[in-house]
Length: 348
Length: 291
Image (cartoon, rainbow over all chains, first blue to last red; front, side, top):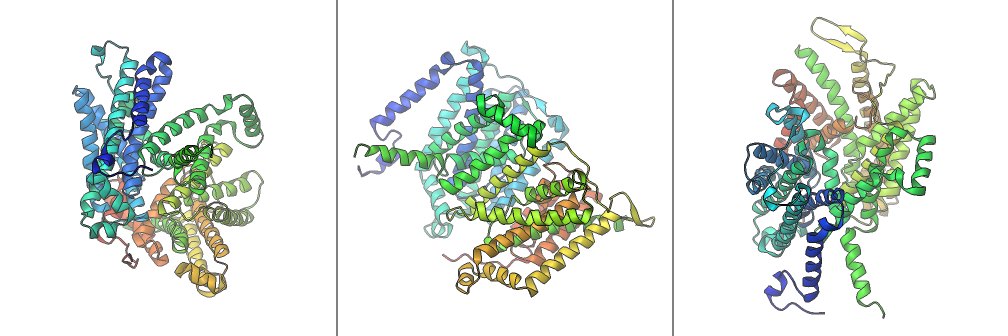
């Protein structure tokens, strides 16, 4: 095994030639994807991209800093509404994107201030109630459309000379790739190491001179920034925002995403978001699967209520959550690392 | 009018207190905040509903079946899910209970659909048993308070005077020491989950007639119960009761005097404020973490 001798070797983006190669393959794949698949699949990729953004931010907070948040849908909602208002005002997209993130980050910092005194279940209930409160408050404000929500105008992408869907896909992909690299760099920096020290032992971290209040608040703010950006993309994606969609279950699904992917790893966030998005779309049309779907419908007809068949999504997601914690607490990332280690020595 | 507000506050507060008690029983025994509590109560309430409407049981046998079901559900949750996890941290436990919550939510929606049903009990919320020009007490109000007091008294007797209660207190203090003294700690833990599920189920049966019976009916009571438990200190049973009543009182006073629309939010705002001032809750003892 090769040992790292210099700090530079730890922080460089591409540690070896293979990683350059695979990154190039990934970039090329993303670049040529619109030519390969239908527009419908591009919208799925867009959904994956915004889930990746939330997962990256949430994983920084939960996986790397060890602070539990059950209210991330609240940050997404704030970002989405901020973006919707700014887009209606006709601001340019890049300002809207950063603005939505910044608004969410400021709220995150405010929420982070009480949270540095709380831990465990107390933090869970505080963030949970934050998430609930945000949607209730938004639903009562008339300028935001109340419970009915509001529509979001399209952004102007005609200068690219592409169809709107394809141009939007490139926007989503570019933002996601930039944020993945950004996250990875945060984790390799002083801030990221401070986060991990706090996660492993906050007392030890404060003894070596890490300001707990500062870094915990910071972690909340960064995490909320990601969620706010994802909210902006969400508003663009659906062209409509309403408070009902940012409910308690959405927050739990975000948590489920990073648990499935693997806590505390960027690869895990990406894998978790991709698999979770794909899975929830597949589960929605479970009755169309050839043999299994029929068995399923018959079973439902005999014992269950046919109108509630969509609820199988919840059952499956819940079972996945339980199974991940019981069988593979590291998530997909752990599985991936183990597979890699196994094949490294494969023939022997 | 203030008398009516107080009555509503005590009724809401006793339901929150029951949910908080269910939460605290488990948290004291295992340090797990059980997010599946609400859904377990919801499923149990559906069992009562099915017993009453489909199989035509009268109320008390249906209640008995529900209590038995709730106990088995809680015990199975501990036995089949919680116990199988290999030494997870707090986040892992939260994820497991959230996962179980989703499974139950999905199963209930799958079995009974998401349409709202009306759920009627022998004590209805429309017939008034006592009325002055200032206030009115309905049968449901009276029954809620009486049942809550009965459950609390039952818990007190259970913990104070029975061997099971003694064993539960022993594993709450130190699981390994209890095990060395011959207490079957795992089984007692399962019983704790079962008893907690019963308390939750009673809360669910009391909630259903005033709201409606649908799979999301316990979300709000769960969060309020959780908030009440946090307010009283997660490890204190009297704290849970006081927290529940206090929460009901604050919420109803705020709803009447300031704003009905933001009634649901104020409870959470107050929780965050209380936690900011006293992070271990009103009656909780603050432990400094040993390193």
